Image (tube, rainbow, N blue to C red; front, side, top):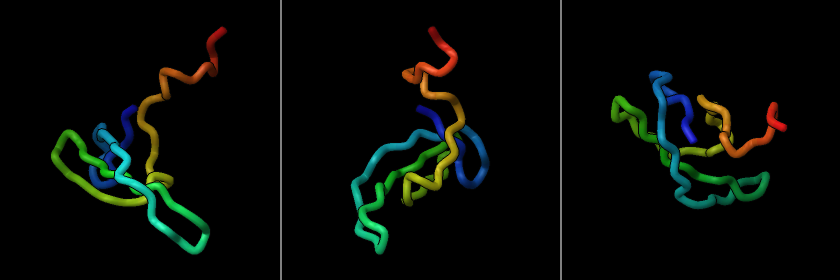
Length: 61
C-alpha cells in the first residue's frame, strides 16, 4: 500500500516497526521511506493513504 510522504507528498512505502506505549494505549510505530529517499519514524495513524487499498471491496460487487 502506498502513502503520501509527510515532507514532499511523493509516494512512500510504509513498514511497521512495532508498538509504543502511550497514555491512550499502544500506538503502532511505522517507518516511512519515499521515492526521494526521505525517511521518518512515527505513529501510523498520522499517515494519509495515497492510493486506495486494492483489497477493499468498496465500489466492487
